[in-house]
Length: 133
Image (tube, rainbow, N blue to C red; front, side, top):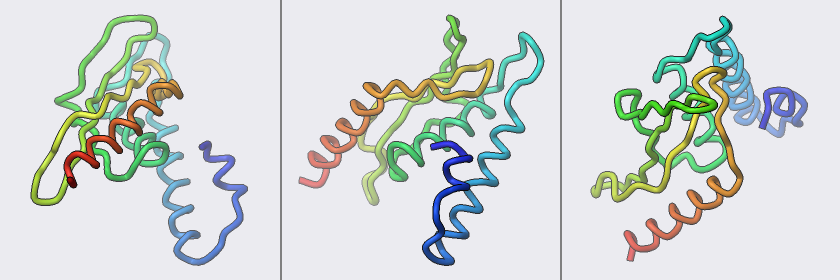
């Protein structure tokens, strides 16, 4: 979901208006940290901001995104930062890994392959089902 589509969405109540404003501020912040010089790459922390945004908006607010220290650098075309995704449960901690999110290190764009997202969502549901009983 882009910032432009969020701006055009109708506002239902004050809570949604506040949430929409927060989302737009975060979108502006993410746009500001994108690398701008040719050949420059984003730090793991900058890339993680994009990963957090994507996971919380597109997958689940319950999925934990690995820290910048846990990120794995992958050379390639494009070079990417890979962040592990885990599912935490109250009183149980992180019960398992459910996938990873990849961020283009040149642009801070999340490489959001729909098949990968569907697989992560399915893994979250299955792990949650097994954990709860």
